[in-house]
Length: 119
Image 1 (cartoon, one colour):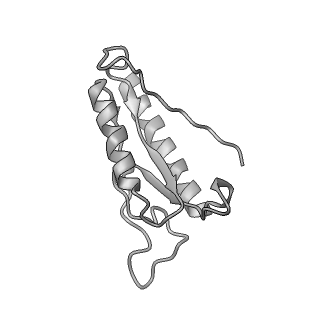
Image 2 (cartoon, rainbow, N blue to C red):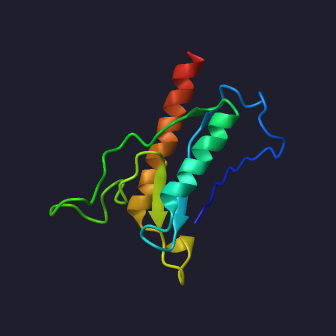
């Protein structure tokens, strides 16, 4: 699987270098819950501390009705960012396609916001 990871923590406290930059979050854990919301909240707080603009997922929850499926986008029901789950013994290469598609949706949403800001 091709991977793109962008992680930032300045280690220098609150700076203005990232002010008005765009941020978004994606997290994956082995458990269905796995404290993913806490991870996204922490990323959003870090972004806010640096004056960054946070982009949410912008999708309604999937897989939350009798007609839902694990193949639905946003199957884990996040609003703040993209969440994925992969079994501990299989690792990130075993993420469901729906989780990867949800992450791709977030990436497109970030790109759209960047285009709006540049206009």
